[in-house]
Length: 194
Image (cartoon, rainbow, N blue to C red; front, side):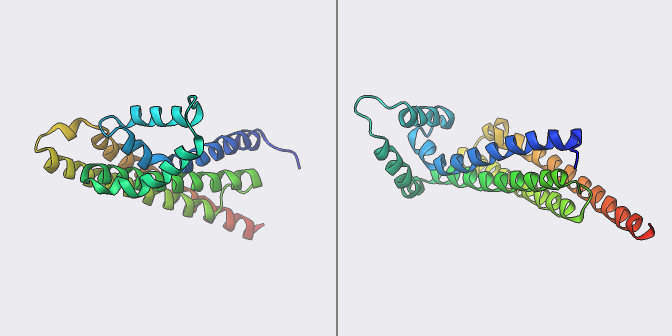
C-alpha cells in the first residue's frame, strides 16, 4: 500500500507526540520535587533539581536524587500551599497525559488509513472532558488563591490564563468530535450504498 503525504506527516507527528507523552509522564513524577526544591519559583526550583540529577557535582549521587524524588511525594503534603500546588500540577499533568494519549490514538487511525471513524470522535470527546477538568481545576485554584492571599494577585497568574484557554480547547474538541462523528456516519452510509 502506498503511503499518502498525510500518513507520512502523521508518522512524524506520532513520533513527536510519543516523545511529549513520555516527557509528560516524567514531569508528573518530578512535580513534588520541583515544588519542594523552591516553593517561591517552581520553574527555577525544577531547573536546579534537574541540573543536580543530570549534571551532578563531585559529591552528588544520582541514586540519592532519585530517592529524594520519591520522598518528596510524602513531604510535599506537609504544607498547605505546596500541597495545593503539587496537587494542581499533578492533576493537570494527568489530564494532559490523557489528552496526548487521545491524540496518539487519532494519529494511529490516520496511519491506518481510516481517519473518519467513531473512535476518533470518542477520543476527541475524552480530550474535551480533560480540557474542561483542567479549566475547572484552574478555576478552583484561582478561587483558593484569592482566599489564601486575600488579594487580587492570583487573577494575573497562569491559573487565570488556563481557564479560558482550556475552555476554548474543550469546546474545539467537542466541535471536532461532532464533525468526526458525522463524517463516520456519512462514510458508513456511503459504504452501504456501494
